[in-house]
Image 1 (tube, rainbow over the protein chains, first blue to last red):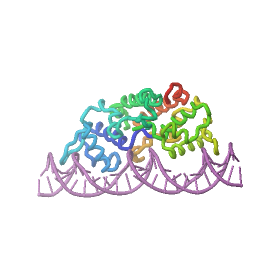
Image 2: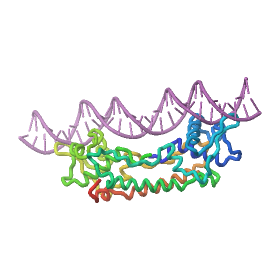
Image 3: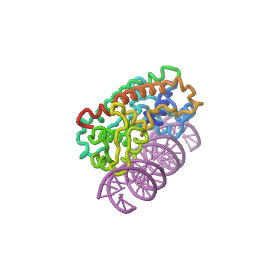
Image 4: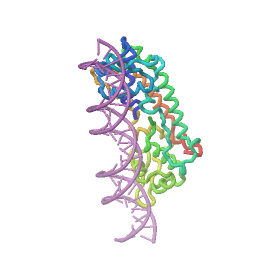
Length: 136
Length: 136
DNA sequence: GACAAATGACACTAATATGGTATCATTATA
DNA sequence: TATAATGATACCATATTAGTGTCATTTGTC
């Protein structure tokens, strides 16, 4: 079981890099070079982050990506939700006939609680907090 | 992102059913009927639980599955580990050259902490606690 | 012993998710 | 107008997930 998929991981690191870079815009070319991720894949990821409003892009020569919002305002859970669709853990697998008690099912309730706890923890980690130290 | 895969979910519910059943042995036929899960799939799952020592099986007519250990001693994390290989979240995706600081990487550290917290929570939920109420 | 009812072992398949590539269109700047 | 950038989008390969099917073996019962 893994918590972060690769696109989330790449996205977080790319955002961190952009957040730290002095000239605010970073191009895919630069990010590819500095972060060592597959170029096309990274492009797709950045485009997505742009669509979702975390980054802002400018086309044309000299273009690139910059943060659309402050690094304090972006948390891990935001990025995960984009690429992994949030934590939607307890989609019951049993048919209604068999397990009609959705609301009181104990397993479902317990898992739901854990889910909430994990989500809360993931919401406490902001990009700002990740770039405080030397490393991403 | 889902925490439990389907086989884990089925496994837990099957174990719960077996734990509650009076005549200790439960056959695949009965479980299939009572829990509404696909028969062959369930069989495979139960076999696995037997191999892993959570259940004990008896072959031949009148055979079936029963708990090999007490319901208090089986926790969610045990079952997850069998079918989902435990929580192995922070396998770094970046090449060594790019990200050599495995030990101090902040993202990795934070995710590791969350991982531990989630695992701890999953270890507190036993089969016994799940079957206390009416529902599984 | 023969039959029936059970699991064991294991090969196979279908569907979906993940990780990644490639191409053409569009935009902006020099 | 050439060039360097992103936008949109289709495609592909592999892995994982979910599930099926079959033959072998064991065990209880008539």
